[in-house]
Image 1 (cartoon, rainbow, N blue to C red):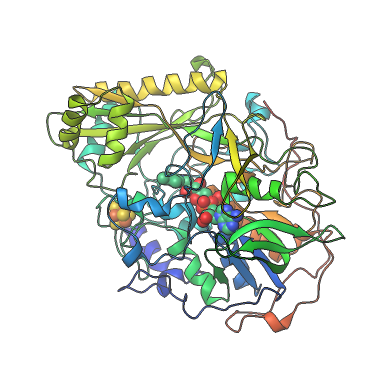
Image 2: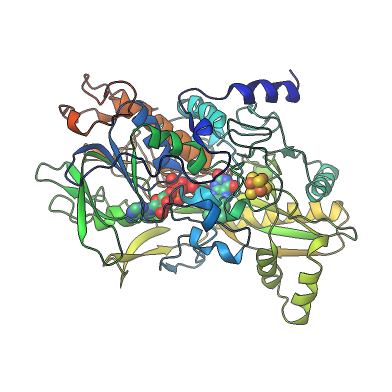
Amino acid sequence: MGDFWRGLLKGAVGPRDNDSRFLLDVHARDLPGEATMRRYRDDDEVDLVIVGAGAGGSVLAQRLARRGWTIVLLEAGPFWHPDEDWVSDEAGSHSLYWTQPRIIGGADPVELGKNNSGRGVGGSMVHYAGYTPRFHPSDFSTYRDDGVGADWPIGYEDLRPHYERVERELPVAGQDWPWGYPHRYPFSPHPVSGAAAKLREGALRCGIEMRVGPVGIVNGTFGNRPHCIYRGYCLQGCKVNAKASPFVTHLPDALAHGVEIRANSMALSVEIDATGRARGVVYADEASGPHRLQRGRSVAVAGYSIETPRLLLASTSRRHPHGLGNNTDQVGRYVMVQGATQAAGRWPEEMRMYKAPPPEISSEQFYETDPARGFARGFSIQTVSPLPIGWAEHVLADGHWGPALREYMRDYNHWATVGVLNELLPHPDNRVTLADEIDPYGQPVARMDYTLGENDKANMVHSTKVITEILDAGGAQDVLTIRRFAHLIGGARMGASPEHSVVDANQRVWGVPNVFVADGSVCPTQGAANPALTIMALASRLAQRMADGSALAGDPPHAPDTSTRSPTASGSPSRATSSPTSPGGSSLTAATS
Ligand SMILES: Cc1cc2nc3c(=O)[nH]c(=O)nc-3n(C[C@H](O)[C@H](O)[C@H](O)COP(=O)(O)OP(=O)(O)OC[C@H]3O[C@@H](n4cnc5c(N)ncnc54)[C@H](O)[C@@H]3O)c2cc1C
Ligand code: SF4
């Protein structure tokens, strides 16, 4: 079946068990159900308290709310009202980013802020670019197969059904995908802009195949979500509702099934009782407000790769004097970023790279280890489209300022940009710790140390050469390069033993029966793929295992508290009361490079 018919048919049908696309209002961008959502008291013992309404936390909430769980989602940032809060302007979008103080160190400190984490209902995906590739099967066993990185305690097949389900929910648009585990996408590929077409020409001349997508951007209508209008403001929050983020893909359905999103609520610690079980989350609803405890039968932390380890480290108790799950000094270790060098080329004709979503075409031809290259693992190639402030940073990074910077700025319309995503390997000393500095909540500020390894550097050098060759082959008259990093992963990784990891194959914190981690910090490796789809797929799998009881093995069942049941929840409460089954996942040994 051709792309046209496939897109028409599958786009029209859409996923089951998630009505978000129909709940959105075609005339307003607010999250439907905010005014009428179920509210709980702090002393209501809900089934689950989730910290963080981003990619992982939102999917977990939506899935379990559908199974009758009572849930409070604590979110540090605000409840967005996009028609008023989001602007089609780079400088005006700073409120979307996590810009609270953090300390960076190591030999290659990573700049933190707008490029790696978000804050507010919907999390970082509110202003992510929109690329939604899957990880490759090889990403789950890099140590076994390539002698570097780490092996996951689960395999690709554990996530595959969840990848497929989330791809239908976003929905993902793209050409048939030949790399990794070959697969198709529910929506057909978007048209390609002039800038991306020029870059594809250059790639083809170098023998590199680039395909359209995969992007979480609607190509057609999807329920009440309209077609993308190709205005290029995806990183500023899509005011059209064409770009997928939990704000439009999972939270509307979560609210309709009784979840409370408590915005402007910063979680400060997970409270552990005398028996070693979590009894809730301490949070502050204003920077200087009194600390409160939201009670819950279980807790899931989903604050992303810096805030999750920070919260676990800050959750000290008699049983966990060094932080929750940190008895073997694993919390905060193995934080990763991806190398994200970008090279821009200049052509005599106008490229106008802003006239499209930043994510358009990509290649995973160099994703896997090739011994001939002299380093392990690989990289992807993706087109990107910086707006003028991003373009100024790019020009500055290449060493131009003053009159030259002004001239390059005036020339913006003639440039097209291509970038890489390098798989950088996990290392125990690349880690998040608590600094001595205190934030306005009285919490220790997070410190992140990062140092590149030799394999990482070789990967980055090689990939920069490849994208420069693409520009040269495409006839670029001038090339400017910026070395940068993107994305965060790790810091509370999953593994087969508590000596080498923070959570088990069910994302449950070792040694604590009812605390889970449901975000990007659980990933032991990151591949050369953007992480959001994998984070959502992991949360989807976790929800399934929490709902059927297998993730709660060993946790004594509790009688459901019907007084806190949502009146809108569908079905009867299904919290684990069945006999526990053993956790799933493969039995590969966790290992480090
Ligand atoms: C500019 C940019 C571009 C990106 N582009 C892409 C892309 O194209 N493709 C892709 O796959 N990925 C991309 N990403 C990365 C992607 O957005 C993240 O990997 C993903 O959203 C992480 O999901 P998460 O659930 O782990 O965390 P998040 O989605 O960041 O959610 C965490 C939430 O927790 C909240 N929180 C944190 N700590 C606390 C606390 N103590 N109390 C209460 N709330 C708390 C935060 O405010 C946040 O809302 C991009 C990210 C950025 C910033
Ligand atoms: S380019 Fe498309 S997806 Fe991006 S912000 Fe505009 S309408 Fe939304």
